[in-house]
Amino acid sequence: MVLCYPSTPKKLAMTVGCFVAGTALFAIGSHLSYVYIAPQQARIKARNDFVKERLRKKRSNG
Image (cartoon, one colour):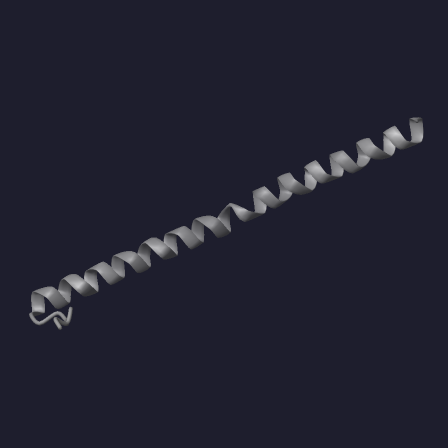
């Protein structure tokens, strides 16, 4: 059985670098997701309000 353990300082540095890069990508993705949530929620709310108002108008006219 072969262990995938960084046995040299160069391999350890590469492992740490890959971990940091992955963590950075995850953090960037989380940030972008958080930033774009508010506009999406506002768009959904506006659409729901439009549909509710339209249904009220149809119900009162019909």
